Length: 125
Image (cartoon, rainbow, N blue to C red; front, side, top):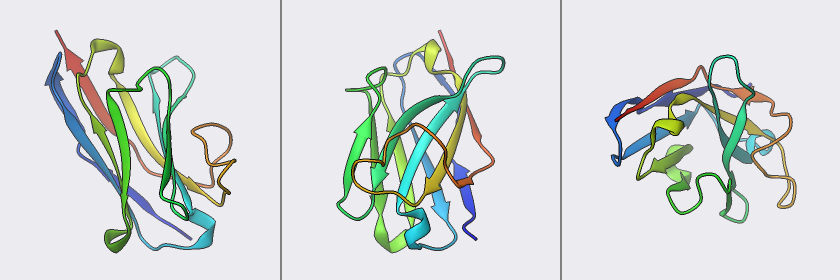
């Protein structure tokens, strides 16, 4: 069983930055694909970014490309989401997720096995 704990959310003004962290309790092959999703209450969940640990490769959704970056620290079993140039439409609950995946299947979409509790990001103008 893998537990994911997110941190780093908060309130920021337009144009500001935040870095979200998601610490996994343990690294296993069942969690070699880690991702970030976000959801606004009443709306569908949106995939933001994914990181395939085996090849240190990443995928970022078009909606945040150029502003958000996903990275991973092997020593800490922690995935990060660096968010720059934040806009009001980035306001959401952000969730970390993990699953067993391959290079081609590690995308911020579909079913994930493990989920964190979420961290709120609020961007105000």
